[in-house]
Length: 487
Picture 1 (spheres, rainbow, N blue to C red):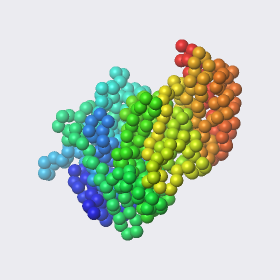
Picture 2: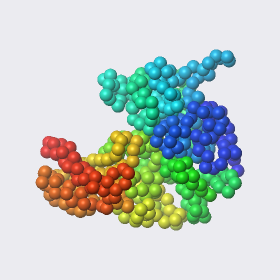
Picture 3: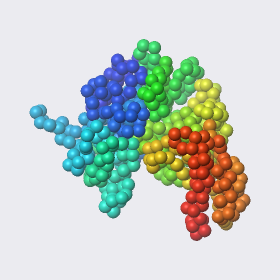
Picture 4: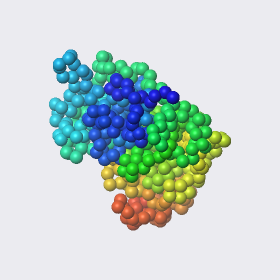
């Protein structure tokens, strides 16, 4: 068995003797790289962010920022990591290192106050600094009041980094001031080479193991042999269970790098999205080709989470408040389920059977999500939450409508947060179809939509509020689309 190893800031070290559940964060801090901090331990503050080398969309390699507090270090066997300490360039013996341009701008513009969160901000900013094509989309304005700066810097890249010192304006100023990487920048040059290939991993300590099969067939065979195994992709859900609830697994099986689960195919009648592609990868590969997904992505958690989270994982958890199921329901998506005996296709509307339960059998994996074509032209995703970004939905509503000659020919509405599972609003759909797209129709259907599901009251919202927001979301859609449809 090959020893599990990880490359950190250019130096390769064994993962041993870390336990299989040890996070990247704890692994780094135990080795003196204390710039990586723990703030929330559930992927919401970004103090722990680091860079990893991943397959690129426009270049062979992208530097991607992830939450080190969520990912088991064994999941990065054979991979490259750069921490905030590794961004600076070493000087001559006896001289201090040269700050990275992102670090320099943060320093001169007062972007650091107490400093606890600063290394995490720096790593997230560095990922955006190296994003291919950033300056090609530069905003010609001065960036004031905008989420894109004159240098093309997208502030959404920092949506998962929370500063409790409220020092956001100087951080934004630093982000909007960074230039472009120079030709001799080693991390920029690294993008031109392929990232480390995924390696099959068998890392065991005491009575637990972290396993990464090399192929889908191996993964399915392993799951048949180990029905107790916990399957992980980006670990954005399982990592929280490990950190906050101290859950441990005898066997964890990682499927995030399986090539069979990382394909994206556009065919005449459908779009098939591999279950292990991250949301960021899907967003950049589709490039707006599925408008409803394009509306979802910026509202799904934060960039740090989207850099690890997958559609397969979001559906696999079966959460009634996941943001992707309402959108996929409105798109009439199906899931492709695979086990050692073969595959089957299940409409997502038939997939969920109860709270965090589904038709997926022991030993089955979600291989892909399949979206039928053509797409409905009138779409919207409304997420009601306490914060604009990086928050959990109180209610999520997705619409996909076909409107021809002023008549609603087809309506699909997906709901989250109003029942034990994500659901289709079938009664509201029926109240729209065949009716003219006019105020009276929208108001009548909104009344029907308010009664869909069985919303409950909790710390995020009351049942009455959730019901009211369902109706308001349809009225909002009508107000937003009437002018576009009539024109």
